[in-house]
Image (cartoon, rainbow, N blue to C red; front, side, top):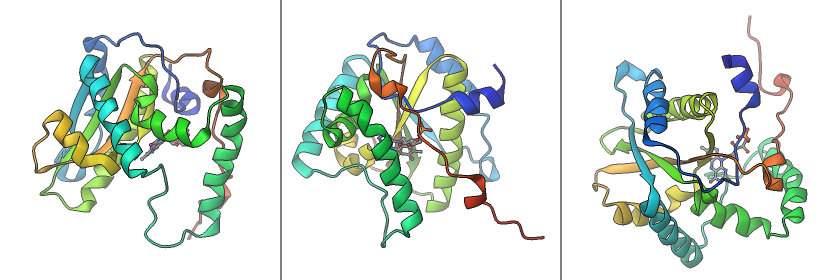
Length: 217
Ligand SMILES: Cc1cc2nc3c(=O)[nH]c(=O)nc-3n(C[C@H](O)[C@H](O)[C@H](O)COP(=O)(O)O)c2cc1C
């Protein structure tokens, strides 16, 4: 498969088969992923691969934390979002809802508790950063995340980035015994798609490129 095809085909998957991913497959993905560029080639990322009973235990802890604190998936804005952005989020949820209706599930619960459960994926990867880095290094993690979802797709593994769990960073650190000086930046669910599930027919829209691009010449 070529890169263009992988970029066009990849999408976030929100229902997984329980089948586990062989360790070698995860290693193959991560060996590809670390080719990502990073500032001064610091390669600041650290990957925690959580699978098996530990993955289940982590989700039980996250769902408990979600039910207590009710911090939901959101844009994480620090001031009111300009309408353009809010509209994209709203349209995404609107177009996702018919699939969730077909599944007879509550959309808030599906997204929030589903995210805490990595949508049933057998493996979760948490990308961490040492807390000595400034926020500038979040860019490097974003780049490596992009590589990860594409590399996984290329070798037949589906993904969904899970930002929600970072709201429960303390609980994750406690559950997985992560050092105090490490920050969990993003989680990723990895597994084989359950194509029987209606939600996996959902494909998010993209705005017209003209909306994002301004030429200065
Ligand atoms: C940083 C980041 C955090 C995300 N967090 C979540 C999440 O917590 N739960 C979820 O269901 N999807 C999450 N997503 C997936 C996005 O909703 C998805 O990428 C977006 O709707 C575009 O759809 P696509 O990935 O299928 O192209 C996240 C994606 C990114 C890049």
